[in-house]
Length: 127
Image (cartoon, rainbow, N blue to C red; front, side, top):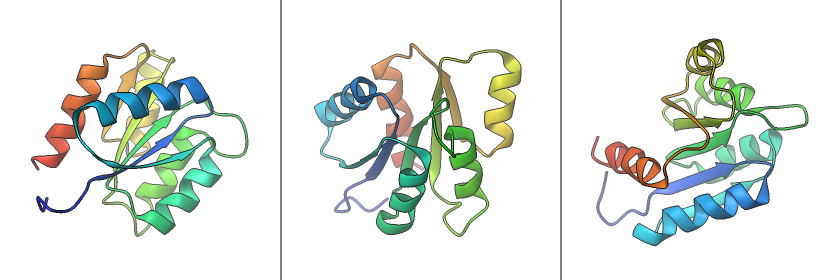
């Protein structure tokens, strides 16, 4: 990753408090270029417009497209190089498998450690 290029991160979560927590966590360490959406449809639109490097998406969202659907759409499109992190309150192995089969690069069960999220982003940057 080029040092002068800001990492673009899209947060997709229907819960405003969770988006705020993620934004604060991510901007505490580094100045990333952040985008936010409160549903999968808007998240996919932002992926197409902003071309984020990383998408951090909640699995359970109301509406036509949940996080797993969003991940699948991203990974089956020309944006498949986008790194997708799924966050979920659903931690059964079948839920994790569903997320990984949709193409998720990382699946974390809530509550998760903000430090761990920063480490995931840092590991992506070092690739």
